[in-house]
Image 1 (cartoon, rainbow, N blue to C red):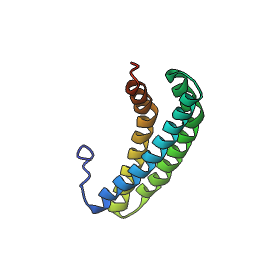
Image 2: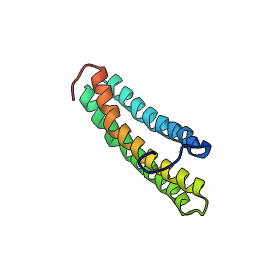
Image 3: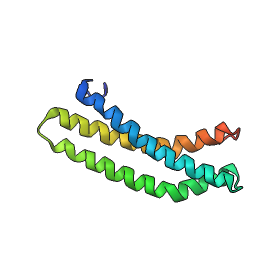
Image 4: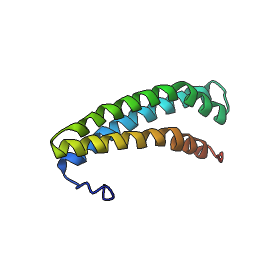
Amino acid sequence: MGWLGIAVDPANTMVAAVLIAINDDDTIHMSLRYQRERRSGKSRLDAITTAIKTVGDAVVVTSICLALGFAVLMFSNWGGLVAFGLLASLGIVMALLAVLLLLPAALLQREGTRV
């Protein structure tokens, strides 16, 4: 936020609650699919690959739709709403990248496999 010149105020801190909920939802979907694939006997790498191929599409589509939906707020005349839309959109995209890149690496690392 400092790089973008956005002040930290109560309106902007509400974005954190929205982002935590959205990221938790995506993380839970991906983790549960991975767990189901592991329980069915697949290797770690196969389970991650299957989870990304099956749940990844839905996570990407919903995250893009949500980011675009919040981006509409940037056309508002009220500065607080503009900042909320910008932060929410950027945060959703960053959360999407984390779910698709960092979560699989963390799951593999957790079980002792290097990426």
